[in-house]
Length: 192
Image (cartoon, rainbow, N blue to C red; front, side, top):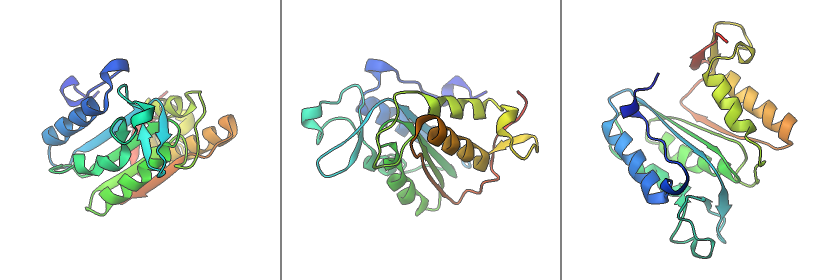
């Protein structure tokens, strides 16, 4: 239900770090007051020698991590001028929990912020798409995810499904940080 002018999809060779940054900055600039910005990354993640998390965008060179890839610590700087009230950072890749740092920084600016990831910052992630599939099913409103059967899939229920799915199906811990957001935020009406 999101209009095409309010979303950007970058796949494969188009998903370079500069292209991702440009897309996010453009959405930040267009977002009206009270908007929710969702940034979702699915792919690969690495760490540099200092332990900084870098998402392996299409332009990454593993021998030049200082100058290539999407450095997650840069994400808060992309949000300057954001008039919205909520930022949701989601990622399905190794070390994706590194988004918790940028989420905490953004939360200190007064924004409501979520970091929900397939892995913790210290963990690699499975090669399966369990996290992405779980998030998509929750956003589609699967009634199975509506644990309290109140007609909506809430943030707390999404978190519980991701946590359970990653732990039980993949044997790993997912990442989670919510600043200024309660578990009762409805992410989708349940109907499937």
